[in-house]
Image (cartoon, rainbow, N blue to C red; front, side, top):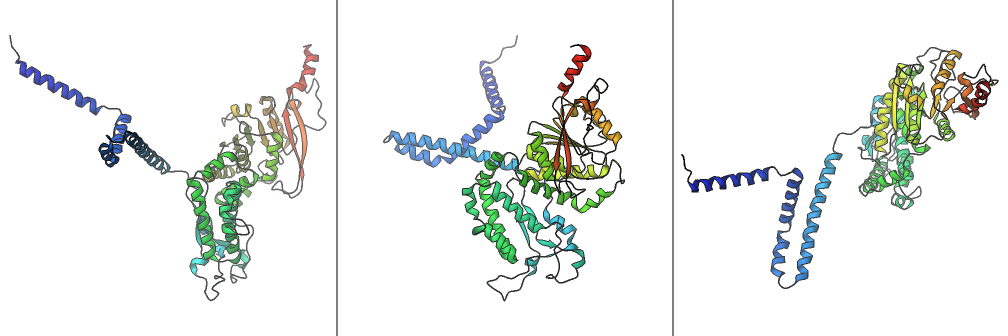
Length: 487
């Protein structure tokens, strides 16, 4: 029988205890390890204060309490610093990027000319420099996205491009980066700042806002660039203070004016240069392309009561302008389906830019989806379930033939009660009557109202016209079913 020396046994026990203690230290949960690090950092930061406390502890007990409070404050300040570093790391993550204004100008640079060509009025002997003539600035937005780059040139008509700068006529139909920048600054000033906060930027009679207008009108590049820098400084300050975040949250959704400007920015950076491709359709067919303009879409939103809880569908959405506007103004869930490949491709391109732009403006996007396919075959396009729960449908059926309108009407049989259908032609004939013969026809469940729109409401004519809102209302069939079935 083997005997074990008691001293060796004690050494082994001590060794096992030390090993277990080491093991426990290594396996501390991450949060506790971080807490220990914070405590150690706080202790290191308060070495001087602690030393002073020990010297005076016996003479002034109240000082000890104050010093203990100081320790806690130092510790909390370090924790706050850690949180700030974590937030900065999160903000440094890649985000959706806008298409900058200068890229649009550079792509068509032959059609642009210098705008800021005048010298400083206080020094008339100076001549304009190339830096002034091809002025570049950046503009700060309310959101966390990077500032936008602007190359401040003016678009000119093609038949005047060989003339002198003074004789070249501005092309009012082309993208103007100076107008874009000015309008953006004005909208930030108007909708993101309170009256008291606006005083920091002045107004059209004094201050930074006055300088933007004054130096733009005088074509003094250095003055304009400085005014933009001053504007950016104020906006960055308000962003750091959380002012713009709060004001944007209070605004919730952009109003009509702001929405129109954002959609203009989106369109000018994604579709405008290739808009001619939208004209490639067969004349007098169901695929004739036409857009409903924002002013009429605004009316649609008001008439149908669309809100953030609504589901909206645009059957034949084209490049998606209506879907984007409705989602922006209401925050609703919005769907668009388009059979033609080119418009649908543009719609998806616009959606990508729209998402980045709305982030720059610190605004919610709404839930938006685009599908490429035939709206008469919603099952194949995975939209049948969405169709059944839709609150508002838009069908720009102005150019549709009778068979297409009839096929569309069959889809309406599956809509829920109260769904509203906006169309440019009525799906219900004027003299339609409900009787036993028409009881099961889709036209019989639609209660139709007629409205008038005015000039420039649609893209295909400057004249006014009519549009229709049909509401799914099966209650109007109840008397006929009672008469037919006796219940």
